[in-house]
Image (cartoon, rainbow, N blue to C red; front, side, top):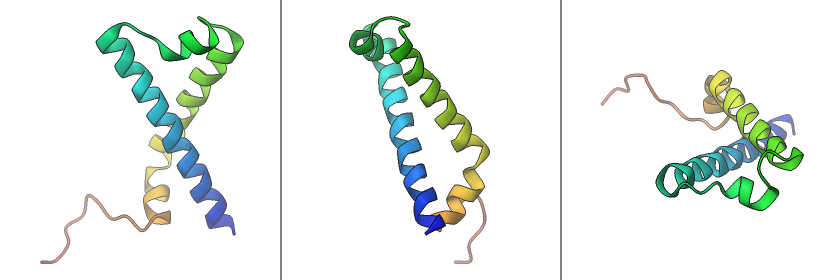
Length: 81
């Protein structure tokens, strides 16, 4: 049960990171901020979105080994041929 909860959090975090990456791509390529367009520039709602994306990034960076273990991912180590 606990593993299922954390996997759900992992999916939520991945979704937030995807939204953040997409938004930054729009800003970089087209000078268009989708979050600001939807919620207004630096409104409480847009700041919440930015904060959640930032927290998602911290979660991902600080917990990458635990996340990989939870999803049975193995990277960065040599595997026998």
